[in-house]
Length: 155
Image 1 (cartoon, helix red, strand yellow):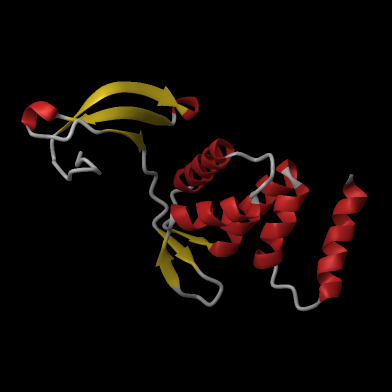
Image 2 (cartoon, helix red, strand yellow):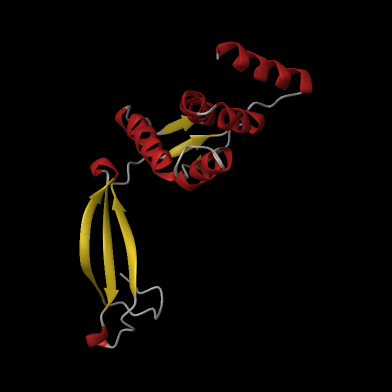
């Protein structure tokens, strides 16, 4: 692993521990000063990469699955809510595992979006509305108001 401080390609693992329910390994690394390194310390995470090969967009285009894009959308929707990054990572792991277990080569974006909405609706109505405001393709403020009213009726 390359040191992010001095770019030397000789680092050593000084601590490892299992995190996120066994889905990841957190490794504490140190740039080796005996090999001319800067003695800097940094953390890396290792996890199994489940292959969701592709995503089919609404317009029919096919693009590679991008975990960071889904994660970024979730982080924006959950900003200043009680949903933490660890919950988001656990959700993403479950989502990817679900699609990988199905052995599908491509997943339509609406299936990913629906899974995100189910997760957010169960966790926090504000995060759900934030995500839905982008995902939902609303054509009028009345449609948006109906969504909010429907959530108020569930409480």
